[in-house]
Image 1: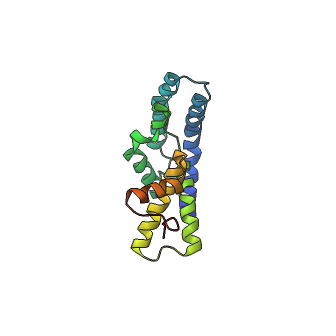
Image 2: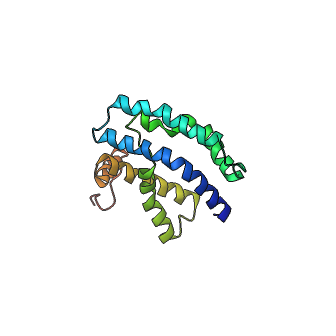
Image 3: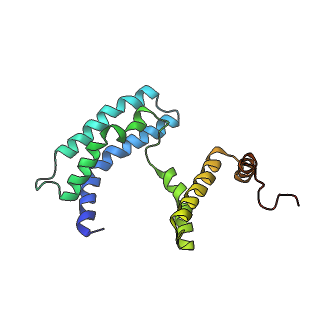
Amino acid sequence: MKPVALLTIGRISARVSPILHPARTAHQEYHAGQLSLEQLQRLRPSVESQLDEVLKNPPPKGWPADAIGLSNRLYRHWDEWFTFLTYPEVKPDNNDAERALRPVVIHRKVSGGARSDWGAQLLAQMFSFLETMRLQGDDALAQLCELLSLAGRSPPGLHST
């Protein structure tokens, strides 16, 4: 990332973080039983108004191009940013998705990648299946054997001779 881009992100972050942090904290307080759903949902208009105020009032010299791009993205997806305040079952970040991708990234770095489109698709399906089984608390091997038997095939090493 260019130094100018980091400076821009720092300027915006310094003005936006004081808005986002209390919103995330309120979400945590709701899940800890310290806020009611109504109290959580009432925060959204205020948080959106504060963010709008920051974006519409750039520094004296104006926002740099990077900040304008970020501002445009925020406005383009405005209805999505604070969904977690209206629907608390939605998390305020994508940490779970990032964690789910980690094994895929490690595999790619260690193995050098799939080396073909077919291999890449197979790996994507395999990791998707494994992560789904993990999230659902299912036994991936048992489910795979079940799928193979439904397809009329025996899992490797389990067929009789």
